[in-house]
Image 1 (tube, rainbow, N blue to C red):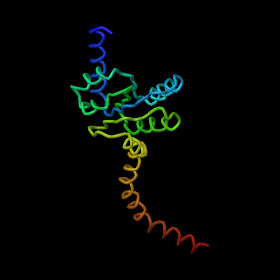
Image 2 (image 1 turned 30 degrees about the vertical axis):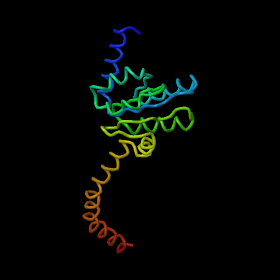
Image 3 (image 1 turned 60 degrees about the vertical axis):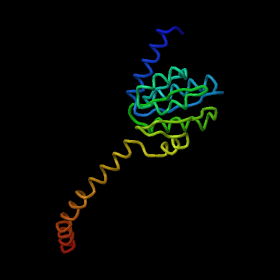
Image 4 (image 1 turned 180 degrees about the vertical axis):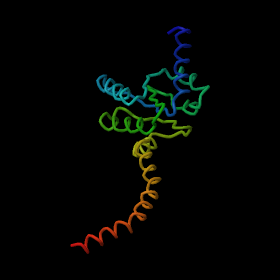
Length: 168
């Protein structure tokens, strides 16, 4: 790899890191090619990204970004999984895949500015997804209005019930 290719790789990775909200570093040592292909397919399907990087180039690319805190974790075979939208989906995908392929090890992650170790990524994976949380929030916001409508309609409903009983 000559200097221009290295510069292009650093610039591309740096741009990717700047646009990502979460980055997870994984060690893929001992993973079979079929497993790696399956992992890439699942990550693409989840609209996330996955790149195998050279450690020195990744450290240079991370210098100008918020992901500089990960520079100490670029040791050994390293792949960068990143998400621009939902960090929970990426963490869930990686931890689920690591259960079926134990050769995949999560080294560290940077999620919305917080440096996390591999165990913390597993804890993030247990959180509900963003859409589930939004649904719960909307349900909580809608509950007082629903209860008010129920209380206001109760006298009319009770009157109708009483009249139907009298008629019978």
